[in-house]
Image (cartoon, rainbow, N blue to C red; front, side, top):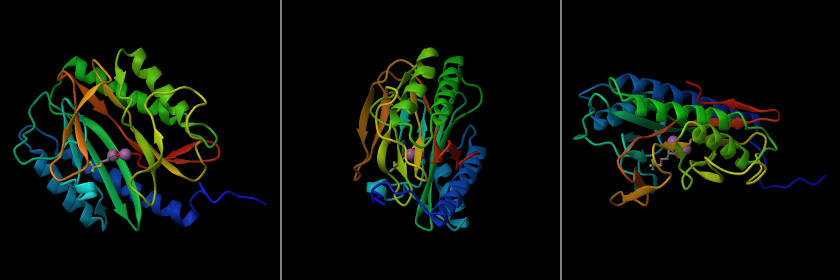
Length: 258
Ligand code: MF3
Ligand code: CO
Ligand code: CO
């Protein structure tokens, strides 16, 4: 008869709202991807994503979130995450850009990102990006009610390490639902059977950041915000992918599938 109130999963109606907002987030990311080209500014991508989001009858969750000044994160080249779009930041052939879209609709959040190339990029950039995508997928495959966050991190880190790269340990995924960020922390490295237990009918993000030469990064303040952005220590490459995942009894659903 006892049931802990904490960690109760979502109702079917709440899950439906998550499915809706996550699909719209994925659609917005696909829209943003088409804008990536030489000569385009990250400020333009921001403005276009903002308008597109409104056209879907949704809100851009990053805007004013802990003082974040823009509607989407655009992390170019050595920016690990939380890059702030700028009207004077022009994409050039050879650049890699992670676009991280978070939408809010009917009180629920959908969060997804991917790394895109501007023209031809170096083999190293391609390899780091591939490692981040494979690491994310390996982590997602561990998602199942009863498994733990450490299982996700372990699987991600193994793939990334085997490819010769480094997962960022200090920043990671998160619970999501009626809040943008909530427990548990979802690491990109860890030990099997460690960390928090994954609960049925709750959502998390899996969003490993993968660096070319080191897990370390440098932190930069965003003016008037408690959010920081981060760069690699030596200007080398970094990449990230992110999906919002529903934890089910026997596995998972990728709610932001693009
Ligand atoms: N979308 C990011 C994440 O994956 C968070 C961005 S917070 C912001 O968790 F304030 F920088 F937008
Ligand atoms: Co996220
Ligand atoms: Co995100």
